[in-house]
Image 1 (tube, rainbow, N blue to C red):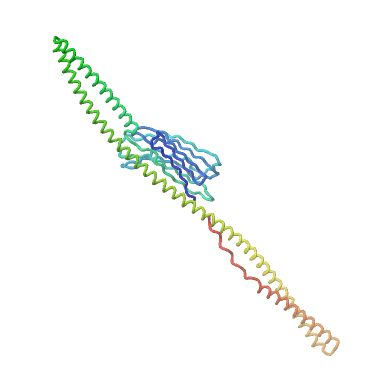
Image 2 (image 1 turned 135 degrees about the vertical axis):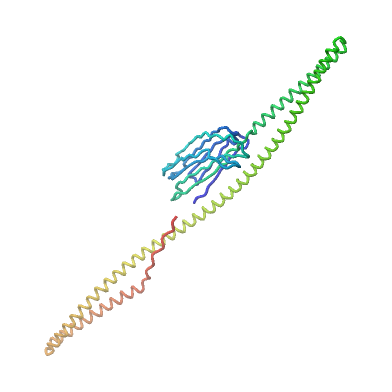
Length: 364
């Protein structure tokens, strides 16, 4: 089974995420998604499957889940291919989904996407399963905190400007108090009012400062979580590199075994052809031996008939000579048959023994 080559790109500070998966140079899966989602909000997920080679797909589906401490909730279950289908090189499957996050606050919820495909690699169907952690779900995103911080800073600057303006007004009122004693009571009242306003603004400034410190603490905590996630990503990247190295080694061993198997198959075919030839020669020799045996039996019967005739005509000298000649001929024929049989037997004994049929090749 072929292994996977995974290229995962997760921009931590960007608004959108992108992941690409290439399997065995036959299938490429691209997933686009946001890296942060608010509770109760909806987001768009885009899936693109590209076939880099001719493959037969048995099944293919995509599943998106919402995971928190309360368990896992399925947001999407889409069967992309439900029956065996052939896809030529260059074919594409593009899907766009709109998904919504439940409006229930959980601790550290996460959105994951799982892709499954069962298609032909080498000579048989083999499954491919991969899971992406695509989005972190929060009540307030990092951009929301940054906007609140900017607004707080603007309010602080405005309050400082107001304080400076009020101090200028107090100084002007004090000057007028020295110049016009008749309006002293009115100016004193206005001064007291101004002091109260300053005190109120100072309290408001103190409150805003406390809120700013709280926001700064939350920002530092968020940065720590971001660094922890980055360390986890580096660990996963190193594990992926180690798996890729193991895959290359296994692929090299597989190719060596394939070459050895081809050589053994060729040797087996040669031995099988030699075995078939020896079997044919053996059958031919058996037929020749049977033929010679039948000739020998025929000759024996003729010899018995001649001996019988010889016993009846023993008084005739000419007949004796003819029978002697016939016996010599029959004996010569028997010797020739025996010699032929012995020669065939010797050739069979010199031939190598028949080889047993080779074992069947292993299933690939």
